[in-house]
Length: 146
Image: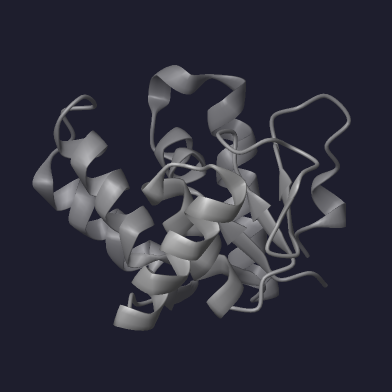
């Protein structure tokens, strides 16, 4: 099974009752990655989720804390000085924002083959890692999550 990195938008949709079908897909995806033990995310993803959940989504602190503990079942990549340098290299190579490049660097450090994201160009490879949009037509969950 492929090791998959989960981008912030997936986590946010999984926790957004207004996201409709995207919420259903995101919840199933994260759940199956947890069960299959082939999912990863970074501290940055946890921070971005917490920021949106406490701000725009106006979720209760206790709910956000519970969700963060739940997400910690995935492999969590902790940033290092080397990861910051690598993000700068990736930014320069692929003309990404620093924050998107940081996602790619984290996925690379976790030996991921795929980044599941709505934000990156689906089908493009960044540092040898394929970006895949799980909300795009034709996406098959079974190809990525056990």
